[in-house]
Length: 185
Image (cartoon, rainbow, N blue to C red; front, side, top):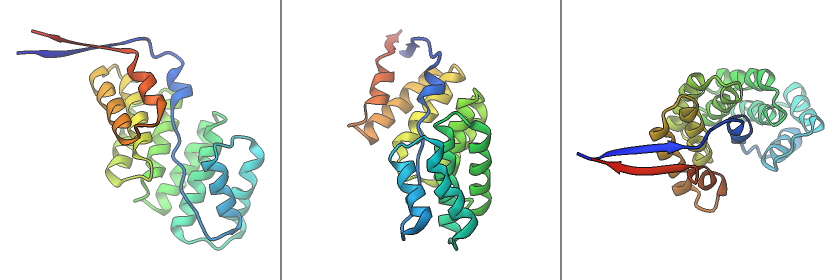
C-alpha cells in the first residue's frame, strides 16, 4: 500500500500576509456600491471605509446589500490587519444574512490573521458549503488554516483546488512550490 507523504517549507509570516479576502458585489449606485468597488479594487487606506460606514448609517439597504457592505468594510479593515473590527463586521453580516458565504470566508481569513486556525477552518468550511463568488479564495484560505494546524496533506489538496478553480491566479501555485510530494511503500 502506498502512502502520500507531504512536506512543506516553513509557513512563518505567510499566514498573516497570505489570507485572501473575498468581496461582495453591491450594485445600484450610492455609497454601498462605492464601498463594494473599493473592496474589489484592493484598496486598503482608511478613507475608503467612510463610504461603507456612511452607507450603513444613511442608506436604505436590502438585507443582502447591508450584509455585503459590512463584509466589504470588513475586507478593507482586514487589509490593515484590523482583525477585531473586521471580525465584528463579519459577525454582523452573518447575523443579518446567515447564508452569505463571503461573510464566513472572510471571518475565517480574519481568524487566520490572528493565528486562530481551528476557528478559521470552521468558518471557511461553512463558507465553502454555502458557496461564494470566488471559491478559489476560500480554498486558498482553508489551505492556510490547514497548514497552521499542521495538516499538510489537506493544505496541499486545497492549494491544488484553488489552482483548479482559478488557473490564472499565481498565489496558490507559489504555495505549492514549497511542497515535496513522495509516495512511500
